[in-house]
Image (cartoon, rainbow, N blue to C red):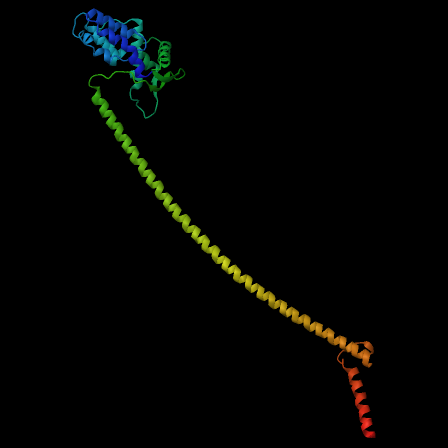
Length: 307
């Protein structure tokens, strides 16, 4: 429940307080306001002059104190006070609900985000006879949007997650609130400083990692460029060597072709000049030509002699 809803529920009683000039009328108005549903804040009603006039009166002064208990007190403070008027069942339920708000809103002893309240402690502080009565009260507070909580009968605890800001501030509590807010602000500053230090650390690590990656990329690029240059030189040398081999191969083939051509000449010469009977002679390939030359020179010599 938000405060506007609670203020709207109190507004009719504030308007009636302006016309409640008699102490009895003002006392009855206090009883009606504390018994009505959805009235959980009472500071504005306490500020009304006709209600403040009840303070100090012997017969109706207790109603003024009772209204203060409903504004910022608890069931325990009501039981500890003397001279307060008795409560109707509706007022008892209302004061127990308000007391549950105060207990649940108290700072937990641990750093957990939720507050665990035991059945035993709540029953004792709210003056309830059994855990069933406590469960009914907590269920009513949940349905009225006073708290966000869950019941755990197995562990006999009430797990409170959040509390509606519906209690009035007691006199003198502003200084305590300022101190608490100052402490909270200091914790926030400490957390922010830790976050900034962590952010700076992350950025520094990122810069170092980027520098390492850049250096590694340059090294890899240099190695790849050196490898490409070396590979081009090796391929050029291989072509030259291959060309040399091809030249030697061609020379050898040419020599073989010349040998074959010489053999062919020998064979052809033998057939034409009558030497060798068309067969190649080893070691004397020019025998046919020699015989022919001798015959020719012999004939020439004979002619010269006859001359």
